[in-house]
Amino acid sequence: MKLNQVTLKARDVGICAEFYERLGFVLIVDSRPRYVRFESPEGGATFSVELAEHPAVGEGPEVYFECDDLDATVERLKHRGLEFDHGPKDQPWLWREARLRDPAGNLIVLFHAGTNRRFPPWRVDGLTAPPGGG
Image (cartoon, rainbow, N blue to C red; front, side, top):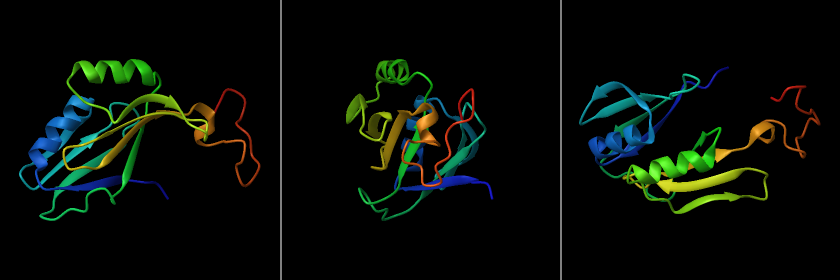
């Protein structure tokens, strides 16, 4: 099984589209005002934003995007006018994270975890990262 995409709900798809383009995602479907779909600039993963008159705010999904150089990415995005709830900080789960919200209130987490993303020390099956990372 392979994850295809995540769809976020928003009252204003156009404003969200502008936000995600500033984040650096590539717009691949533009059916405004109802729907937009993006592709990640790395890895080919996709996600979309769909019109919803009454989206749940604050209780919805948390979307995580991994960055090789989180600190530099956050600085670049701040120069593009994006505001963060908090900048990069180390978390007890061994990830470094920065958090912000899209215009619809969805929580966006930019992070760097390295091998700890798939192979944390507390991994249930006890597997460790293969040589060269994972």
